[in-house]
Image (tube, rainbow, N blue to C red; front, side, top):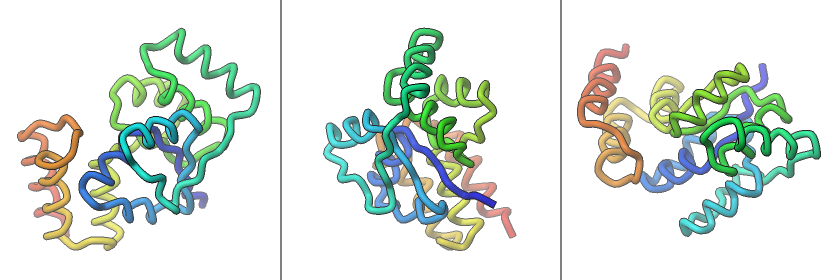
Amino acid sequence: MANNAVSNTGPILHLTEISFIKALELFSFVLIPEEVSNELRKHGIKIPRSVKIKSLDSKSKDRVKVLTNQYSIDSGEAEAIALALQEKASYFLTDDLEARQVAKNYNLEVHGTVGIVLRAFRHKLINKKEAIEKVRSLKNTSSLFITQDLISNIIEAIEDFS
Protein backbone atom coordinates (compact mmCIF):
# COMPACT_ATOMS: atom_id res chain seq x y z
CA MET A 1 0.00 0.00 0.00
CA ALA A 2 1.23 3.49 -0.83
CA ASN A 3 2.43 5.52 2.10
CA ASN A 4 3.14 8.91 0.57
CA ALA A 5 2.14 12.29 1.95
CA VAL A 6 1.78 15.90 0.95
CA SER A 7 2.34 18.51 3.64
CA ASN A 8 1.58 22.14 4.09
CA THR A 9 3.88 24.34 6.15
CA GLY A 10 2.65 23.57 9.68
CA PRO A 11 3.77 19.98 10.34
CA ILE A 12 7.25 20.49 8.85
CA LEU A 13 7.67 23.72 10.82
CA HIS A 14 6.45 22.22 14.11
CA LEU A 15 8.42 18.97 13.74
CA THR A 16 11.52 21.07 13.09
CA GLU A 17 10.80 23.21 16.17
CA ILE A 18 10.71 20.09 18.39
CA SER A 19 13.75 18.52 16.67
CA PHE A 20 11.73 15.60 15.31
CA ILE A 21 11.82 16.00 11.53
CA LYS A 22 12.92 12.35 11.34
CA ALA A 23 9.26 11.47 12.01
CA LEU A 24 8.67 12.10 8.30
CA GLU A 25 10.54 8.81 7.72
CA LEU A 26 7.19 7.18 8.50
CA PHE A 27 6.18 8.01 4.94
CA SER A 28 7.65 6.61 1.71
CA PHE A 29 8.07 10.22 0.65
CA VAL A 30 6.68 13.65 1.48
CA LEU A 31 5.91 16.21 -1.21
CA ILE A 32 5.35 19.93 -0.86
CA PRO A 33 4.31 22.52 -3.44
CA GLU A 34 6.45 25.56 -4.25
CA GLU A 35 4.41 27.92 -2.02
CA VAL A 36 5.00 25.72 1.04
CA SER A 37 8.70 25.64 0.21
CA ASN A 38 8.69 29.46 0.11
CA GLU A 39 6.81 29.67 3.44
CA LEU A 40 9.27 27.30 5.12
CA ARG A 41 12.22 29.33 3.85
CA LYS A 42 10.59 32.52 5.20
CA HIS A 43 10.56 30.80 8.62
CA GLY A 44 14.24 29.95 8.21
CA ILE A 45 13.48 26.25 7.83
CA LYS A 46 15.80 24.27 5.58
CA ILE A 47 13.79 21.83 3.45
CA PRO A 48 14.54 18.37 4.87
CA ARG A 49 16.20 15.91 2.49
CA SER A 50 13.23 13.57 2.89
CA VAL A 51 10.89 16.25 1.47
CA LYS A 52 10.61 16.87 -2.26
CA ILE A 53 9.25 20.00 -3.93
CA LYS A 54 6.76 19.10 -6.67
CA SER A 55 5.24 21.40 -9.27
CA LEU A 56 1.54 21.62 -9.85
CA ASP A 57 0.15 20.74 -13.27
CA SER A 58 -2.19 23.21 -14.99
CA LYS A 59 -5.36 21.45 -13.74
CA SER A 60 -4.07 21.64 -10.16
CA LYS A 61 -3.17 25.32 -10.56
CA ASP A 62 -6.78 25.95 -11.56
CA ARG A 63 -7.93 23.98 -8.52
CA VAL A 64 -5.80 26.25 -6.29
CA LYS A 65 -7.75 29.27 -7.55
CA VAL A 66 -11.05 27.54 -6.80
CA LEU A 67 -9.91 26.48 -3.33
CA THR A 68 -8.65 29.92 -2.32
CA ASN A 69 -11.82 31.58 -3.62
CA GLN A 70 -14.27 29.03 -2.22
CA TYR A 71 -12.70 28.48 1.22
CA SER A 72 -10.84 30.65 3.71
CA ILE A 73 -7.45 28.99 3.21
CA ASP A 74 -4.22 30.56 2.06
CA SER A 75 -2.35 29.73 -1.12
CA GLY A 76 0.12 27.38 0.60
CA GLU A 77 -2.69 25.27 2.00
CA ALA A 78 -4.59 25.37 -1.30
CA GLU A 79 -1.49 24.34 -3.26
CA ALA A 80 -0.81 21.50 -0.82
CA ILE A 81 -4.38 20.18 -1.11
CA ALA A 82 -4.26 20.47 -4.90
CA LEU A 83 -0.92 18.63 -4.92
CA ALA A 84 -2.28 15.88 -2.66
CA LEU A 85 -5.16 15.39 -5.10
CA GLN A 86 -2.86 15.59 -8.15
CA GLU A 87 -0.46 12.98 -6.73
CA LYS A 88 -3.21 10.82 -5.17
CA ALA A 89 -1.40 11.09 -1.84
CA SER A 90 -2.17 8.63 0.92
CA TYR A 91 -2.04 11.41 3.52
CA PHE A 92 -2.40 15.17 3.73
CA LEU A 93 -0.41 16.71 6.60
CA THR A 94 -1.72 19.92 8.13
CA ASP A 95 -2.36 21.53 11.50
CA ASP A 96 -4.76 24.10 10.07
CA LEU A 97 -8.40 23.48 10.96
CA GLU A 98 -9.85 25.04 7.79
CA ALA A 99 -7.40 23.19 5.54
CA ARG A 100 -8.24 19.96 7.38
CA GLN A 101 -11.96 20.47 6.68
CA VAL A 102 -11.38 21.28 3.01
CA ALA A 103 -9.12 18.23 2.61
CA LYS A 104 -11.78 16.00 4.19
CA ASN A 105 -14.31 17.39 1.69
CA TYR A 106 -12.02 15.93 -0.99
CA ASN A 107 -11.72 12.60 0.86
CA LEU A 108 -8.08 13.10 1.81
CA GLU A 109 -6.85 11.37 4.95
CA VAL A 110 -5.56 14.15 7.18
CA HIS A 111 -2.96 14.03 9.95
CA GLY A 112 -1.44 16.84 11.97
CA THR A 113 1.78 17.12 13.91
CA VAL A 114 0.31 15.42 16.99
CA GLY A 115 -0.89 12.54 14.82
CA ILE A 116 2.57 12.20 13.27
CA VAL A 117 4.18 12.03 16.73
CA LEU A 118 1.64 9.40 17.84
CA ARG A 119 2.19 7.42 14.65
CA ALA A 120 5.97 7.53 15.25
CA PHE A 121 5.33 6.09 18.70
CA ARG A 122 2.97 3.35 17.44
CA HIS A 123 5.50 2.40 14.74
CA LYS A 124 8.28 2.28 17.38
CA LEU A 125 10.30 5.11 15.85
CA ILE A 126 10.31 6.53 19.41
CA ASN A 127 9.55 5.02 22.80
CA LYS A 128 6.84 6.04 25.29
CA LYS A 129 9.12 8.45 27.19
CA GLU A 130 10.27 10.15 23.97
CA ALA A 131 6.68 10.39 22.68
CA ILE A 132 5.56 12.14 25.87
CA GLU A 133 8.59 14.45 25.69
CA LYS A 134 7.79 15.36 22.04
CA VAL A 135 4.13 16.04 22.86
CA ARG A 136 5.12 18.27 25.79
CA SER A 137 7.60 20.13 23.60
CA LEU A 138 4.81 20.86 21.10
CA LYS A 139 3.24 22.98 23.85
CA ASN A 140 6.49 24.44 25.22
CA THR A 141 8.81 24.99 22.24
CA SER A 142 6.75 24.98 19.07
CA SER A 143 4.52 27.62 17.53
CA LEU A 144 1.65 25.11 17.31
CA PHE A 145 -1.40 26.28 19.21
CA ILE A 146 -2.37 23.41 21.48
CA THR A 147 -4.22 23.46 24.79
CA GLN A 148 -2.89 21.97 28.01
CA ASP A 149 -6.05 19.82 28.22
CA LEU A 150 -5.30 18.31 24.83
CA ILE A 151 -1.66 17.70 25.83
CA SER A 152 -2.88 15.92 28.98
CA ASN A 153 -5.31 13.77 26.98
CA ILE A 154 -2.63 12.82 24.46
CA ILE A 155 -0.14 11.91 27.20
CA GLU A 156 -2.81 9.80 28.91
CA ALA A 157 -3.46 7.98 25.63
CA ILE A 158 0.28 7.34 25.22
CA GLU A 159 0.53 6.04 28.81
CA ASP A 160 -2.43 3.69 28.19
CA PHE A 161 -1.06 2.37 24.89
CA SER A 162 0.30 -1.16 25.17
